[in-house]
Amino acid sequence: MYLVTIDVDKCDGCSECVDACPAQVLEIVDGKASVTEEECLGCESCVAVCPNEAVTVQEL
Ligand code: SF4
Ligand code: SF4
Image (cartoon, rainbow, N blue to C red):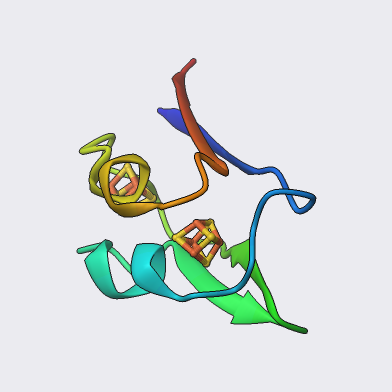
């Protein structure tokens, strides 16, 4: 399983990661990316598209 972490200080809420995620793991809440209860597939698409290096995906 994977742990997805958002650095809210770096995130500007652009929504690129939300659009890129195939598993609806990410959403925008109050202008920042937020992690939902959906299971991350570990594809790192969100990491690739984030312009601010705000997303981290860690295999547990
Ligand atoms: S690694 Fe893939 S499945 Fe997991 S949150 Fe990022 S885009 Fe979604
Ligand atoms: S792509 Fe990066 S900056 Fe944009 S909403 Fe996602 S985490 Fe935030």
